[in-house]
Each structure stands twice: as C-alpha cells, then as structure tokens.
Image (tube, rainbow over all chains, first blue to last red; front, side, top):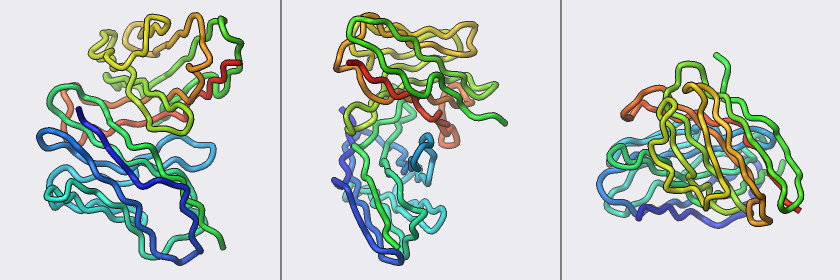
Length: 113
Length: 117
C-alpha cells in the first residue's frame, strides 16, 4: 500500500541555518504530495504542495520538488527562523481510489536563536 | 470563513469509559475526514464521509469506534469502551469538492487530545 517515510527527528538548528527534511514515498500511480506544518497549540496547516512530477511547491521561504525518479519530496529552507519551530508532516494523496491523506511520522523542528 | 472546529480540545478518561469527540467542518464542505496520531507516530486515516454517508471507513481500528455525521453537517466519533491504546490526538479535516482534484485541499481542525488512563 501507499506509504511515506520522512526524516526522523527531532531536528535542532540555529537561526539562519539551512534546513532539509527528507521525505520519500511509495505509491502506485501519480499521487499529489504535500507538506503540512503544526505549530505549537494549533492544528495542521498546509505548507505547500505539488501535484505532478517536477513541480516545485513553495511557501513562506520553504520549497519542495516532486521527484518521481527518486520518489522524493524533500523540504528545504535557506535560512530558518525561530518562528519555524513546529512539527512538519510529509503526506501523499491519490485522487483515484481511496481519497485519503497518507502521512509520514512527522519531524519536530526546533530553531534556537 | 470559520475553520474546522473540534470539541473538546482535551479529554482524560479511564479505561472502559465512553468518550464522544465532535467535529464541525467548514460550512459547505461535503467531505469530512477523521485521522488519528498515536504516540508521536504518523497520522493515520480513520474514515471519510461524503455528506452524511460513510465513503471509506477502512481505517477504523475496531468496532469500539463509531462515527456519525448528522445531516451532513457536524460529525461525532464515539469510543466505547475506551482502551489504553486509544490515547492519541484525533484530527478532523474537511474539504469542499466531491470527487477530489488537485485543488481539493483538506483543512484541519486543532485536534482533540485523548488520554485513556
């Protein structure tokens, strides 16, 4: 079945550091890929998405490129801020068949000033 | 536009008791989903409503869990009797379009943290 594997956390970085959170997936067909973020005390928010191969999703300085050849969707940011501290979830969604999000296990990110 | 709301935000119950979680989706959203995150692991799908009908309940753990969606509006998820392994965060999400599509974003509520002692 479909699955998502993402980088184990927690991840701790200093402000202005470069961030990469790895995400790979297993799925039949051509799923859409997402990064969701959960800030402390809040619900999940969609951070960015890509719906087909080679698409790049971007938002708030974060980027991720849908790489079908490596089945990956790694999240990157060039210069993180303390306010980026949160839990990040990679997920996939297939529009044919069961319409549900399949999530990775989440990566807790802490940014120190 | 009001977001997805969930009630309660926290619930602490003893093993064997019953708990009912409520989700109010965004007005006009036909799709409603329940997910659960247990012990810091991945968020797992429980079930999917389209309006008042259960479209997919393949993720429901067992028959102690019962979900309903009255009149296609709010939804409840009842756990009876609760067991220790039911502890976790229960998320509700809703989306507008029936049938999906690339623009069919799921909007999540803040979750209900359930602790079974």
